Amino acid sequence: MWKCPSLLLAALLMTTPTVPAQAVDPAEKPIEVRLEQAPPARGALLPAQSEQAERSRKAAAKAGPATPRQSAHIVRTGDTLRRIAARHGVRVADLRKWNRLGRNYRPQVDGLLRLTAPATPLPAWRTRTETVTATEANGDPAKQCPVPTADLRRIWVRYLDYQGVARNGSLIMHRSLVAPTQRAFAALYHWRFPIMVMQPAAVNMPGLTDKSVLTSGYECRYVAGTTTWSQHSYGRAIDVNPRQNPMIRGTYPNHTYLDPPNSATWLARDRFWPGMVHADGAVRAFTTNGFAWGGRWTTLKDYMHFSTTDR
Image (tube, rainbow, N blue to C red):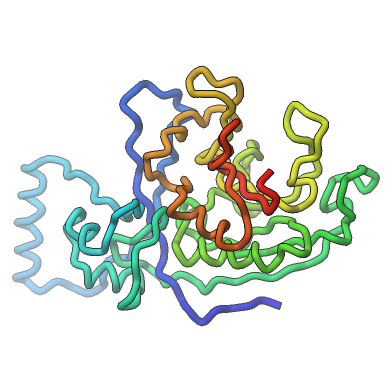
Protein backbone atom coordinates (compact mmCIF):
# COMPACT_ATOMS: atom_id res chain seq x y z
CA MET A 1 0.00 0.00 0.00
CA TRP A 2 1.07 3.60 -0.60
CA LYS A 3 2.04 5.67 2.44
CA CYS A 4 1.19 9.37 2.12
CA PRO A 5 2.56 12.00 4.56
CA SER A 6 0.13 14.85 5.00
CA LEU A 7 2.55 17.56 3.88
CA LEU A 8 2.07 18.85 0.32
CA LEU A 9 5.16 20.51 -1.13
CA ALA A 10 5.57 23.29 -3.67
CA ALA A 11 6.56 22.49 -7.27
CA LEU A 12 10.23 22.55 -8.18
CA LEU A 13 12.06 24.89 -10.53
CA MET A 14 15.73 24.76 -11.43
CA THR A 15 18.39 27.21 -12.58
CA THR A 16 20.76 26.88 -15.49
CA PRO A 17 24.23 26.26 -14.03
CA THR A 18 27.14 28.43 -15.10
CA VAL A 19 29.58 26.57 -17.33
CA PRO A 20 33.17 26.66 -16.05
CA ALA A 21 35.46 29.20 -17.67
CA GLN A 22 37.76 26.60 -19.20
CA ALA A 23 36.81 24.86 -22.43
CA VAL A 24 34.51 21.91 -21.80
CA ASP A 25 33.47 19.07 -24.05
CA PRO A 26 29.76 19.54 -24.94
CA ALA A 27 28.99 16.15 -23.43
CA GLU A 28 30.38 17.36 -20.10
CA LYS A 29 28.37 20.54 -19.72
CA PRO A 30 25.91 20.77 -16.81
CA ILE A 31 22.38 19.97 -17.91
CA GLU A 32 20.13 22.92 -18.67
CA VAL A 33 16.79 22.45 -17.00
CA ARG A 34 13.59 24.08 -18.18
CA LEU A 35 10.58 23.65 -15.91
CA GLU A 36 6.93 24.55 -15.71
CA GLN A 37 5.83 28.12 -15.07
CA ALA A 38 2.58 29.36 -13.62
CA PRO A 39 0.18 30.35 -16.45
CA PRO A 40 -0.62 34.06 -16.85
CA ALA A 41 -3.77 35.29 -15.18
CA ARG A 42 -6.81 35.43 -17.45
CA GLY A 43 -9.10 38.40 -17.96
CA ALA A 44 -9.28 41.52 -20.12
CA LEU A 45 -7.12 44.53 -19.27
CA LEU A 46 -8.74 47.83 -18.44
CA PRO A 47 -7.92 50.68 -20.87
CA ALA A 48 -5.42 52.28 -18.47
CA GLN A 49 -3.77 48.89 -17.96
CA SER A 50 -3.60 48.35 -21.72
CA GLU A 51 -1.89 51.72 -22.23
CA GLN A 52 0.62 50.97 -19.46
CA ALA A 53 1.32 47.53 -20.95
CA GLU A 54 1.94 49.09 -24.38
CA ARG A 55 4.34 51.66 -22.90
CA SER A 56 6.17 48.88 -21.05
CA ARG A 57 6.39 46.83 -24.25
CA LYS A 58 7.90 49.74 -26.21
CA ALA A 59 10.38 50.50 -23.42
CA ALA A 60 11.47 46.86 -23.28
CA ALA A 61 11.92 46.75 -27.06
CA LYS A 62 14.08 49.88 -26.96
CA ALA A 63 16.22 48.49 -24.12
CA GLY A 64 16.91 45.25 -25.99
CA PRO A 65 16.54 41.63 -24.85
CA ALA A 66 16.24 41.19 -21.10
CA THR A 67 18.35 38.78 -19.07
CA PRO A 68 16.15 35.79 -18.23
CA ARG A 69 15.22 35.68 -14.59
CA GLN A 70 16.29 32.60 -12.70
CA SER A 71 13.41 30.29 -11.89
CA ALA A 72 14.97 28.66 -8.84
CA HIS A 73 17.85 28.91 -6.41
CA ILE A 74 20.13 26.03 -5.46
CA VAL A 75 20.71 26.29 -1.75
CA ARG A 76 24.36 26.46 -0.75
CA THR A 77 26.23 26.58 2.53
CA GLY A 78 25.40 29.69 4.56
CA ASP A 79 22.21 30.58 2.69
CA THR A 80 19.27 32.09 4.54
CA LEU A 81 15.88 33.08 3.17
CA ARG A 82 16.83 36.76 3.51
CA ARG A 83 20.05 36.33 1.57
CA ILE A 84 18.32 34.31 -1.14
CA ALA A 85 15.50 36.85 -1.46
CA ALA A 86 17.94 39.77 -1.66
CA ARG A 87 20.12 38.02 -4.22
CA HIS A 88 17.22 37.44 -6.60
CA GLY A 89 15.18 40.57 -5.90
CA VAL A 90 12.17 38.84 -4.43
CA ARG A 91 10.39 39.07 -1.09
CA VAL A 92 10.90 36.57 1.72
CA ALA A 93 7.11 36.34 2.00
CA ASP A 94 6.91 35.26 -1.65
CA LEU A 95 9.61 32.63 -1.16
CA ARG A 96 7.58 31.21 1.70
CA LYS A 97 4.37 31.32 -0.32
CA TRP A 98 5.76 29.83 -3.56
CA ASN A 99 7.55 27.02 -1.69
CA ARG A 100 4.96 26.49 1.07
CA LEU A 101 7.51 27.01 3.80
CA GLY A 102 6.65 26.94 7.49
CA ARG A 103 7.69 29.67 9.91
CA ASN A 104 10.58 27.56 11.26
CA TYR A 105 11.89 26.50 7.85
CA ARG A 106 15.66 26.63 7.28
CA PRO A 107 17.06 26.29 3.74
CA GLN A 108 18.47 22.81 3.06
CA VAL A 109 21.81 22.71 1.22
CA ASP A 110 21.50 21.09 -2.25
CA GLY A 111 17.76 21.70 -2.23
CA LEU A 112 15.98 24.12 -4.53
CA LEU A 113 13.73 27.07 -3.80
CA ARG A 114 11.31 28.40 -6.38
CA LEU A 115 11.69 32.02 -7.41
CA THR A 116 8.33 32.13 -9.20
CA ALA A 117 4.79 31.08 -8.43
CA PRO A 118 4.07 27.38 -9.15
CA ALA A 119 1.49 26.26 -11.67
CA THR A 120 0.37 23.41 -9.42
CA PRO A 121 1.29 22.17 -5.95
CA LEU A 122 3.85 19.41 -5.65
CA PRO A 123 2.16 16.04 -4.99
CA ALA A 124 2.63 14.38 -1.62
CA TRP A 125 5.54 11.97 -1.32
CA ARG A 126 4.67 8.29 -1.75
CA THR A 127 6.36 4.93 -1.38
CA ARG A 128 5.58 1.22 -1.54
CA THR A 129 7.48 -2.06 -1.79
CA GLU A 130 7.11 -5.33 -3.65
CA THR A 131 8.97 -8.60 -4.06
CA VAL A 132 11.04 -9.31 -7.18
CA THR A 133 11.85 -12.39 -9.22
CA ALA A 134 15.36 -13.55 -10.11
CA THR A 135 14.74 -12.45 -13.70
CA GLU A 136 13.65 -8.98 -12.60
CA ALA A 137 16.62 -8.61 -10.27
CA ASN A 138 19.39 -10.14 -12.38
CA GLY A 139 18.11 -10.41 -15.93
CA ASP A 140 18.99 -14.12 -15.83
CA PRO A 141 17.38 -16.38 -13.20
CA ALA A 142 20.37 -18.73 -13.39
CA LYS A 143 22.94 -16.03 -12.60
CA GLN A 144 24.93 -16.76 -9.46
CA CYS A 145 24.70 -13.77 -7.11
CA PRO A 146 25.70 -13.42 -3.45
CA VAL A 147 22.23 -12.64 -2.06
CA PRO A 148 19.04 -14.72 -2.54
CA THR A 149 16.34 -12.99 -4.56
CA ALA A 150 13.95 -13.65 -1.67
CA ASP A 151 15.99 -11.16 0.41
CA LEU A 152 15.50 -8.34 -2.11
CA ARG A 153 12.69 -5.82 -2.40
CA ARG A 154 11.77 -3.31 -5.07
CA ILE A 155 11.19 0.05 -3.38
CA TRP A 156 9.03 2.57 -5.19
CA VAL A 157 9.59 6.22 -4.25
CA ARG A 158 8.29 9.49 -5.61
CA TYR A 159 11.07 11.78 -6.81
CA LEU A 160 11.56 15.02 -8.74
CA ASP A 161 13.22 14.79 -12.13
CA TYR A 162 15.21 17.46 -13.95
CA GLN A 163 12.06 18.97 -15.43
CA GLY A 164 10.50 19.41 -12.01
CA VAL A 165 8.05 16.57 -12.67
CA ALA A 166 7.12 14.31 -9.76
CA ARG A 167 7.72 10.74 -10.94
CA ASN A 168 7.44 7.27 -9.48
CA GLY A 169 10.79 5.51 -9.60
CA SER A 170 12.15 2.31 -8.15
CA LEU A 171 15.34 0.73 -6.95
CA ILE A 172 16.03 -2.73 -5.54
CA MET A 173 17.57 -3.08 -2.09
CA HIS A 174 18.04 -5.71 0.62
CA ARG A 175 14.80 -6.19 2.53
CA SER A 176 16.46 -5.11 5.79
CA LEU A 177 17.12 -1.65 4.27
CA VAL A 178 13.62 -0.83 3.04
CA ALA A 179 12.79 1.66 5.82
CA PRO A 180 16.15 3.53 5.81
CA THR A 181 15.99 3.81 2.01
CA GLN A 182 12.46 5.17 2.14
CA ARG A 183 13.38 7.73 4.77
CA ALA A 184 16.38 8.92 2.74
CA PHE A 185 14.35 9.47 -0.44
CA ALA A 186 11.53 11.09 1.51
CA ALA A 187 14.05 13.64 2.81
CA LEU A 188 15.38 14.33 -0.71
CA TYR A 189 11.84 14.91 -1.98
CA HIS A 190 11.03 17.20 0.95
CA TRP A 191 14.20 19.20 0.22
CA ARG A 192 13.29 19.36 -3.51
CA PHE A 193 16.54 17.64 -4.44
CA PRO A 194 16.41 16.65 -8.16
CA ILE A 195 17.17 13.14 -9.37
CA MET A 196 18.02 12.76 -13.05
CA VAL A 197 16.24 9.44 -13.61
CA MET A 198 15.24 6.21 -11.89
CA GLN A 199 13.80 2.99 -13.23
CA PRO A 200 11.62 2.34 -15.13
CA ALA A 201 13.68 4.46 -17.52
CA ALA A 202 11.34 3.72 -20.43
CA VAL A 203 8.65 5.63 -18.53
CA ASN A 204 10.71 8.20 -16.64
CA MET A 205 13.10 9.13 -19.47
CA PRO A 206 11.99 7.63 -22.81
CA GLY A 207 14.82 7.17 -25.27
CA LEU A 208 17.54 6.98 -22.61
CA THR A 209 20.48 4.90 -23.84
CA ASP A 210 23.12 5.78 -21.23
CA LYS A 211 22.06 3.72 -18.21
CA SER A 212 25.11 4.95 -16.26
CA VAL A 213 23.12 8.04 -15.24
CA LEU A 214 20.50 6.05 -13.33
CA THR A 215 20.05 6.48 -9.60
CA SER A 216 19.93 2.84 -8.51
CA GLY A 217 20.63 0.26 -5.83
CA TYR A 218 21.04 -3.48 -6.30
CA GLU A 219 23.11 -4.76 -9.22
CA CYS A 220 24.77 -8.18 -9.31
CA ARG A 221 28.31 -7.25 -10.36
CA TYR A 222 31.93 -7.13 -9.26
CA VAL A 223 33.81 -4.02 -8.20
CA ALA A 224 35.25 -2.61 -11.43
CA GLY A 225 38.55 -4.28 -12.34
CA THR A 226 38.32 -6.95 -9.60
CA THR A 227 36.62 -10.25 -8.79
CA THR A 228 35.24 -8.89 -5.51
CA TRP A 229 31.48 -8.57 -5.22
CA SER A 230 30.31 -4.96 -5.14
CA GLN A 231 28.12 -3.90 -2.21
CA HIS A 232 25.46 -3.31 -4.84
CA SER A 233 25.43 -7.09 -5.30
CA TYR A 234 24.18 -7.44 -1.73
CA GLY A 235 21.56 -4.71 -2.09
CA ARG A 236 23.41 -2.56 0.43
CA ALA A 237 24.53 0.36 -1.75
CA ILE A 238 22.90 3.21 -3.68
CA ASP A 239 24.34 5.41 -6.44
CA VAL A 240 22.77 8.88 -6.68
CA ASN A 241 22.97 10.98 -9.87
CA PRO A 242 26.23 9.36 -11.13
CA ARG A 243 26.87 11.98 -13.82
CA GLN A 244 26.75 14.84 -11.33
CA ASN A 245 28.55 12.85 -8.62
CA PRO A 246 31.24 10.79 -10.37
CA MET A 247 33.77 8.32 -9.00
CA ILE A 248 37.43 9.26 -9.50
CA ARG A 249 40.58 7.34 -8.78
CA GLY A 250 43.66 9.55 -8.73
CA THR A 251 43.84 13.35 -9.00
CA TYR A 252 42.13 15.11 -11.88
CA PRO A 253 43.24 15.67 -14.62
CA ASN A 254 45.88 12.97 -14.13
CA HIS A 255 43.34 10.49 -12.82
CA THR A 256 43.55 6.80 -13.65
CA TYR A 257 39.79 6.21 -13.70
CA LEU A 258 36.66 8.35 -14.01
CA ASP A 259 33.15 6.89 -13.90
CA PRO A 260 30.96 7.71 -15.68
CA PRO A 261 32.99 9.17 -18.57
CA ASN A 262 32.33 12.79 -19.60
CA SER A 263 31.67 13.77 -15.99
CA ALA A 264 34.85 15.75 -15.27
CA THR A 265 32.89 19.01 -15.19
CA TRP A 266 31.32 17.96 -11.90
CA LEU A 267 34.63 17.21 -10.16
CA ALA A 268 34.76 20.80 -8.88
CA ARG A 269 32.90 19.94 -5.69
CA ASP A 270 32.83 23.51 -4.40
CA ARG A 271 30.12 24.28 -6.96
CA PHE A 272 26.40 23.94 -6.26
CA TRP A 273 24.73 22.63 -9.39
CA PRO A 274 21.52 20.64 -9.82
CA GLY A 275 21.85 17.06 -8.61
CA MET A 276 25.23 17.45 -6.91
CA VAL A 277 25.52 16.18 -3.34
CA HIS A 278 27.54 17.84 -0.57
CA ALA A 279 28.46 16.76 2.93
CA ASP A 280 26.21 19.35 4.59
CA GLY A 281 23.42 18.84 2.07
CA ALA A 282 21.84 15.86 0.31
CA VAL A 283 24.48 13.52 1.76
CA ARG A 284 22.78 13.88 5.16
CA ALA A 285 19.61 12.23 3.86
CA PHE A 286 21.59 9.00 3.69
CA THR A 287 24.16 9.31 6.47
CA THR A 288 21.42 10.00 9.05
CA ASN A 289 19.82 6.72 7.95
CA GLY A 290 22.80 4.43 8.36
CA PHE A 291 24.59 4.87 5.02
CA ALA A 292 28.25 5.88 4.66
CA TRP A 293 29.34 8.17 1.82
CA GLY A 294 32.06 7.31 -0.71
CA GLY A 295 32.89 11.00 -1.02
CA ARG A 296 34.74 10.69 2.28
CA TRP A 297 37.06 7.90 1.11
CA THR A 298 40.77 8.62 0.77
CA THR A 299 42.13 6.09 -1.76
CA LEU A 300 39.46 7.23 -4.24
CA LYS A 301 36.40 9.45 -4.21
CA ASP A 302 33.02 7.97 -5.09
CA TYR A 303 30.66 10.91 -4.73
CA MET A 304 27.61 9.02 -5.99
CA HIS A 305 28.01 6.05 -3.64
CA PHE A 306 26.24 5.36 -0.36
CA SER A 307 26.49 2.00 1.43
CA THR A 308 25.74 0.59 4.86
CA THR A 309 29.14 -1.15 4.99
CA ASP A 310 31.28 1.87 3.98
CA ARG A 311 32.62 -0.17 1.06
